[in-house]
Amino acid sequence: MGAGELSGRDVLTRSVKGQLRRVALGSALGSVHQLGEALVPVLIGVVIDQAVDGQNAGRLALWLGVLAVMYVTLSWSFRLGAKAGERGAEEAAHTLRLAIVDRVLDARGGAEEGRLPGELANVATEDAKRVGAVNMALMSGIWAISGVTVAAVALLLTSVTLGLIVLLGTPVLLWLGHLLSKPLERRSEAEQDKAAHASGVAADLVAGLRVLKGLGAQDAAVERYRRTSRVSLAATLRSARAESWQTGLVLALTGGFIALIALVGGRLALDGSLTLGQLVSAVGLALFLLGPLETFAWVNAELAQGRASAARVAEVLAAGHAVVDGGDPVAEPVRGELRLRGVRLGGLDGLDLDLPAGQLTGIAVTDPAGAEALLRCLGRETDPESGSVELDGVPLTRLDPAALRAAVLVAAHDAALFEGSLAANVTPDEESESGTADAEPDLRTERAMAAARADEVADSLPHGTATGVGEGGRSLSGGQRQRVLLARALRAGPPVLVVHDPTTAVDTVTEARIASGLREFRQGRTTIVVTNSPALLAVTDHVILLDAGRVGAEGTHADLVRTDATYRTAVLA
Image (cartoon, rainbow, N blue to C red; front, side, top):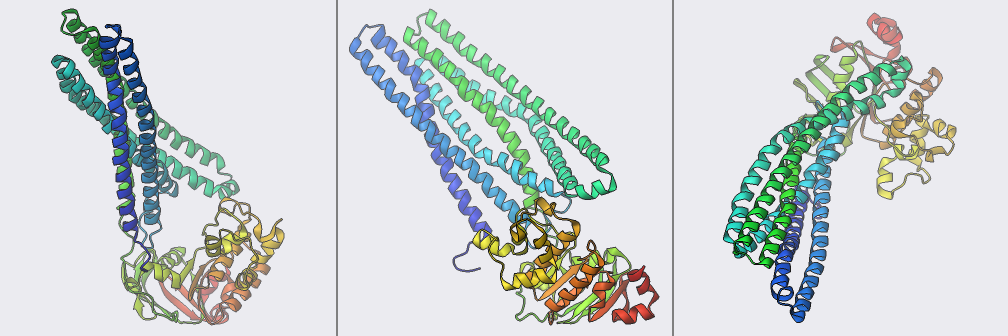
């Protein structure tokens, strides 16, 4: 890490410190506002006793001026305090979103295990927002405490009895509000779980919409989502009912508390213990208390929902890594020799495999599970259950995962295209630097697109490479998407490139041309093609057949077709 760079933890720490400063500032300004709010009925009582009751015009003007200054202070302190609170809440949510995205994109993986993409999106948006709102809730709680404290002191100075009622009754109300928030917390957590699952199912169905239509299964998919959505709706309604009951009961308790203060104050005024102005102040303070006490109810609800969302955020951030964190850098230059020894994972059963540097190697399989397991090992998405995988003689477990992925690129056949232009999908690194990828493509990009025959795709689009491909590339056909994905992988130019079934959706003529372009473009660099396509295997330097998780045969494509029946069945059947 360079001297000018900061780690994610440093950024998070600085952000939290900044938020704490804003919470302190907002709390101070809000407390000033609450102080003013509580003093207003006191000042009105003073005006009645000293100016109105005494018919003193000079004092009346003086106290009205004091009230005017008080209202100006109230207005500005509330505005500035609310601004600090909202900014603290939004920045906290933003910081959490960045932390979640950073964890999901961590080269060591693991955060996505057992979660649909839509669920992770829900955690990064809705849950992060609710946790961020806790900042505003905490500040509002401090404001309310300040208001109740000032009101209690003012009532104590007016009447010890009224002051004691407030001082003793408020903690009881807070305790009851906390108890009433427990069901809301439980139901809020269930609501977010169900909503996240519904979002995940929706994203999953939308991603596979083209396939579902092709299978005629869209009605079944809609019914599946309808069932999931109903479960989410039921959880939301239960949470809403819990919140309404909690709010209603707290308001009823608060109203009873205010009525008790007003009743006691009235009796004290009747027996002469309070003046008319003091009675007005006491009633005004009792009515003022309704605001802070309602705020306590809202704060309890926000904290209950925030705790439920915080638990979900914490699960993602604390998720274990899929692979161990090797700290060694990848040695330069990368020769690109890969070696597997005794690898067991999924469909691989003690696989020994040598993939020489600088060659185009084809790997055919009799079981797709073996191909998936091999790709996961080479891309280090998962470490083998036993055995080792080495790059240039160094075990992958000793290498930094991020540096390894820059040296060994595994291009899956079902990788995603992104919203934006075709050019932005082929050259995403240039888009991030310049803000656009619609400029004239460079020579490497042109060669990569020509090799993958993606230039023909661009020629067929209305605005060429500047044409938008839609979300997930849905405006393109399956074959067009495959060509763009292959062009992106070729253009990246890693020392080692592993491609998986890059031509399953293109016609045979185009496939043969892509095979020739792939060989020419990757000449002299380690390239591995995991496929059963005869056209691709025919242009490789060497072919390896994986059968039952082990090497079943080796040789050129022509020799294996002539001499090995298992290979012929796997490739030509």
